[in-house]
Image 1 (cartoon, one colour):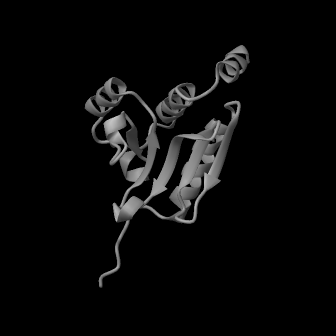
Image 2 (cartoon, rainbow, N blue to C red):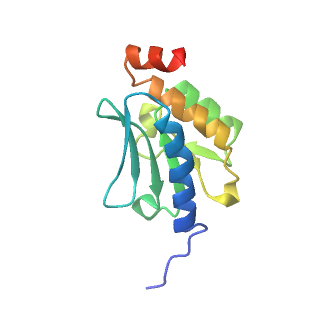
Length: 134
């Protein structure tokens, strides 16, 4: 069996975890967890609102999946289909995905906004008020 060649490596995963984990760390009542498959889940109140998925089900992508509504998902993907795509399995619920590898030139500021919106969709009113008061 031929070895799979990915356009990214462990260093890219580490950069994504550091950059996006830093965004999540600024949001109240959040946690991050790396599972046995190397996926990094971001949670609030036990509910996942985003995750970093390196080679999810051998899809070859290094991607961020974020909670969103269907209209937002469609608008984001239509605006920039090179960087964004409908998240498999979760896309029917509105989740949007973004490529994180250097070849897709991630817009880290836009990804930070996407993560914040996903968090706001799951966070408590008091957590949102605390964040907004900063």
